[in-house]
Length: 247
Image (spheres, one colour):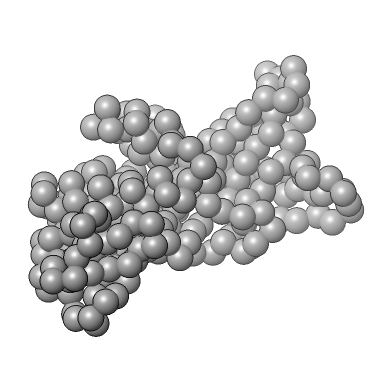
């Protein structure tokens, strides 16, 4: 019966019995963790407040051979990103981040980069950076780390360098085209949005979100990221629809 220990961020929690719940986390070493927290709904359970969504924790859990679910043995709170200082905008954005990570992270596969992305964006949001550019930053990097982001440097057809003047993306295969080779249908990314993408790739989430985001560039990036996410997700994320309404 192997016992594992790692830091983790809780992505979601849902009940399976009168007093038990399944907790879903992302951990750097072990990727997605799905484990039963027994008695978590009981008033005096020692895990009750620790395993809430958006909590950064230390977790100890064990698994049995042939079982899909582990079992939580111990958990200790490091920090809560849904605590008293969190704003409504933050909570909805953080919930969206957690749902995106849950959709992409794999079980039993190390996920250091995705974990660091989520952790850094939660910290940036808690430091009161503007939420819309932080959302764009998270989406772009989530796509890139999962190998779903297009090559935004050169035209797939003629090889022309396109970062300085913008480009078109054919969503179904993420090919990139210059204006001369642009397909009849695709998502357009103008010069300002292209420069914004370059900034995303070289800045921390907190530093990027502190830069004013050009409204049209923001709309173009949202269109691109949402089209790519829709192509690769089984169903639309409810958390994003709610987040847009709130913002």
